[in-house]
Length: 280
Image 1: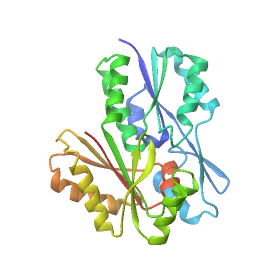
Image 2: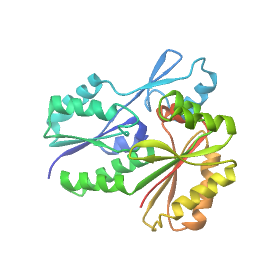
Image 3: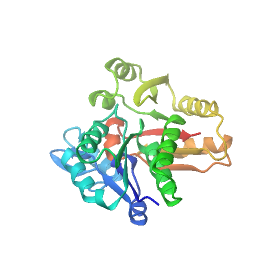
């Protein structure tokens, strides 16, 4: 049986307990800067702490990917202990994290390191990690694990609802035209991931219509009782809970999880944002 390590960046919001129970799981945190003070995402600051600090900070926070040095140091530290390393990253269309991973892979080992572009972030990225760990415990091959990650990537959806599009525009994650109409018309935009990019899916004017639209989108995918459904939020638990209640009306047999968005993701989406994701 091959020894396989899983490395993930902090946007997946992996629970501390999961790291403690899996000694082959490693974290590469992104960086967050608030009023000239730096934090390691998910280590020095929690999602709830970030939302509190956001209300008090003088300047809007900024984010940065793991440095090449940090990635090199981790891979060099663990490379001799494993036959393979799988590094599951936030979408390459949203961050340079994947590209940095590829640079380091080429420097250290093309044969032992696999850098996997999730084309998503947050909840779907976390589900990829969980599935990888399960397959490793079941003694699956590296080829089977990568194939399953590709399957998750191709059958997953994420939809985001943000209160203010200006954050996504400021950080370059959405176009100026999309950002402008949201502010001017006071609408509730629903965004989606398409091939790793965040695009406008629809625009509605009330929160009730947001819920209706999201329910319609997930209903159209005809999920089974085994499908994964996850809601994530940035200080928007009330929105997430109401959405969960509505989802349970049509998917009563499914376990529907509510999780928090990482501070780094919340910088871009803003507080009071929430998202719905699923894997068919």
